[in-house]
Image (cartoon, rainbow, N blue to C red; front, side, top):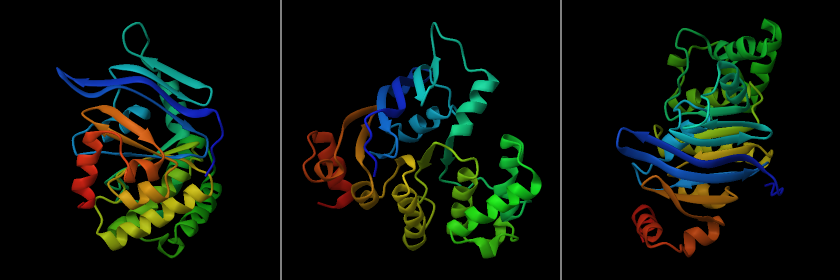
Length: 256
């Protein structure tokens, strides 16, 4: 775990409204290079919406996003991002979803190679070689020529992780990557994520896996009704939460 001083990923007052409903309410957050930040909280708190705002799958109503030296300001008085800016942002920010979002008509290795060729301009063989390296890393080299439909849910999620890593992102976002999987298979995905954390990958994780949040994260943020109500050391947040709403949430999910 890396605790360098500079925030590598930073948001300033990110807000996302759907009509009169405010899903994300002026969330400001900093993640240092090499840190793992987990976002926990009740369903409907805005966690996934916030994460999707970070790579502009959802365009924030207002706010500012910084990745290293790259910055985008959105909202009144600011221009909306250009196609080039979107490409730069998504090139540097990988995302793994609850669903796997693989192309069913492409083999596993083709799924991992395609974005490399389209986004990075790698040749066919170079992209395949890199894809094989990453599939080996997530334990799926032997499935490289299979189609996603012949892979289990856990295997498909590992392919999705390899695909995101193939673009060499500086930050990885995980949106409840185990929620569609049974606990045993989910543990496989969490194991891969732990290895990424050990390797120094900067990660933001929306999760309901409290053991992962406590044991792997550098920082835990608690989100309720679109706001971060408290954040800090995972051991302290989990054992001595300062906010009554956090205590209520943890009591419900931990059964205590």
